[in-house]
Amino acid sequence: MGAIPYLQKPPPYILACMLSSANGLLFGMDTGVIGPVTDMKDFKSQFGGSQNATIHGLIVSSILIPAALSSFFAGYVADKLGRPKGISIGVFIFGVGAAIEAAATSLGMFIGGRVIEGLGEGLFLGNLVVYICEISPTSTRGPLTTGPQLLITLGLVVGYFTCYGTSNIASSLSWRTPWIILASLSMILSACSLMFLPPSPRWLTLHGHQDEADAAWDMLGVSHAEREKVELQVAVEEVPADNDEPENKKTHKLFEIFQKDVRGRTALAVFLMGVQQLSGIDGVLYVVRPLLFQQAGLESSEASFLASGVSALVIFAVTIPGLIYCDKWGRRHSIIYGGFGLALIMFLIGGLYAGNAVHASFGAGRWVVIVCIYIFAVIYSLTWAVSVKVYSAEIQPQRTRASATTLAHSSNWIFNFLVALVTPVLLSKSNCGAYFLFGGCSVIGAAVAAIFMIETKGRSFNEIEKEFKHRAPGRNGIFSALRRRSEKQDL
Image (cartoon, rainbow, N blue to C red; front, side):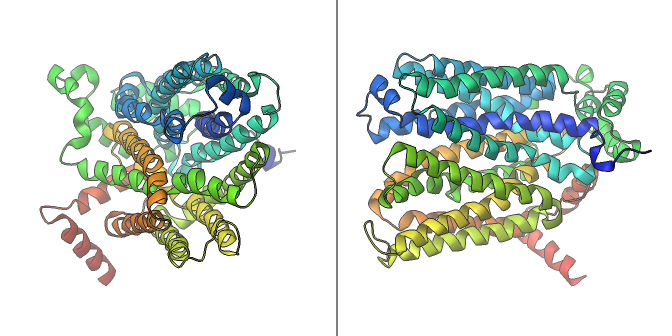
């Protein structure tokens, strides 16, 4: 009697993708923990209850710039050592930072821990998508590559409710416990990633180890029909093995992402990951929404924690259909339609404020804005949160995939920092200007996607590579791209 299909053990490559994605939980937990922790009375009493907005912003955002800096080199590290080792090292450093935060006896020590956390985060987070892209068959690459984003949103939920559970502890353990849990989990995932993640077969092929690559494919349980052998042969022909490279070429390999044949794709990935933050998602969720909840009467810390936890649950729930249907919707249409949807919500909120329809103490306008913010988060989670990260990795050729993808993540963190820095200032100067700015950036993102993006769903990396080489703009870049799209529609 045969086994029931849905009870069969999943292929090893799915298990590897699940383990790799699990590391995304760490980033989500940190994001979910830092806000509630800095609002706890024991944290404030130990590090100063009169922290001004600037100091609070420094505490929260001190992880971002170090992450952006280390992310620039993360691809190079993963290219030299292999994807699992690059991920494991980054997660270990992240865990060290979390442990320092848990043991902090001064505000400077706490911020130092966050800086170290950021350095580790930059090393591992972008490489999760790269690794999953490289070990997944074309038929399942889309849903599997969205796994880290799903675990990030789950981490938000875990982080918020961990803090909700520890907030009533009558000691510094109220705020130390979440960091102890995060540090412990980091060390476990670092060890598991190092011991149990198989090497990327495409990385092995790129470095001239074809026999080891074949063994890795077998270990992952990927069939011969799904290995895209032609693509692997092209990768070997594109770049010689490390041992055959001249020393001066090795020195400049970090900057291959700016070579003529790939810099357009590098720029597209960097732009998309940057404009993802310029949509205002973090500014809206972590600056605007808490302010509106306070105005609606949620003054206590516990009520704020609970409201934030419910928000995280909503984001996690809507990410699941985004994962399931990402290949059905496609990357290009998801980013274009999602961008216009985000812009529409931002313009609506900005219009309500500009028309003086939102009041702090009365009226339905404030509740309309709160509902709009949730709709905004739902649209973002279904579209840009999933598709932008996957697409940024998919369009890169094998030799620059890690470096270009992690550089794009660096762009994301830099603009995340700028949005966190600028949003409170914009809101203090104009109650509607920030929303119109974010809406305008979303429109620009959607327009650029409409002009320059190709659809990658269901296509092998070799097919994607050929399409980009065919479409490569010449000296008339944007006009060439527009003309080719018009010619294709005419056919």
